[in-house]
Image 1: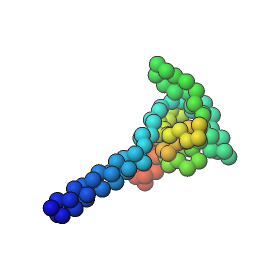
Image 2: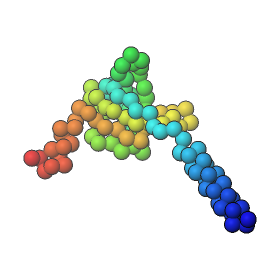
Image 3: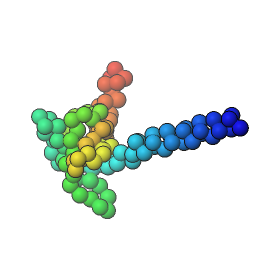
Length: 110
């Protein structure tokens, strides 16, 4: 009887921990693609015009983001971001326009 209670308590504890971890993770990042309209390297603020039916202008902070190649006006970029305190904060910036340039650097120019 004690063994069954211990197993049940352990199972309930594991379920509570699993649910707490799932809740802490929250939703995944939002991914968006668009054309760079401006980028300020001093403030790390990027402005893009998104693609698609719901095209809009977005301002994002890329201060702590993983950035493949610095964005330049006119480049097409794909970003993963989250909303933090009412601001769009990017975690990753892939410069689609400059992928060839990056792959050449990574392969020694060959």
